[in-house]
Amino acid sequence: QVQLVESGGGLVQPGGSLRLSCAASGTIWSINAMGWYRQAPGKERELVAAITSGGSTNYADSVKGRFTMSRDKPKNTVYLQMNNLKPEDTADYYCNANIRRLSAPYAAMDYWGKGTLVTVSS
Image (cartoon, rainbow, N blue to C red; front, top):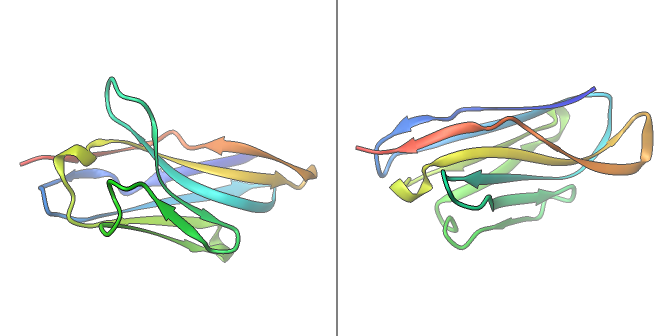
């Protein structure tokens, strides 16, 4: 009933840019917060960026100044603009959302997308 779908990943050269999107759909009452995580092979999953329902954002130190998270509330969609990409940005990027469903509007739980691969290489 609730689904997150990421898109926008691909192969780019160092210094290039990509724009990821994550669309939430289903029987949603409200979205409290959304975040972007990434995980490289053999490494821990880490938080890249997050945005609250009020629009406040925070970023991992490794991406500050290069990545920007934004939202389109009517579309239940968030974006991650990634500029000046580096090889160390290569990872699977996952969308996360804390959501209240129509069937349980007074509770909230986390949902995850299946991920989109970003590869930064020459």
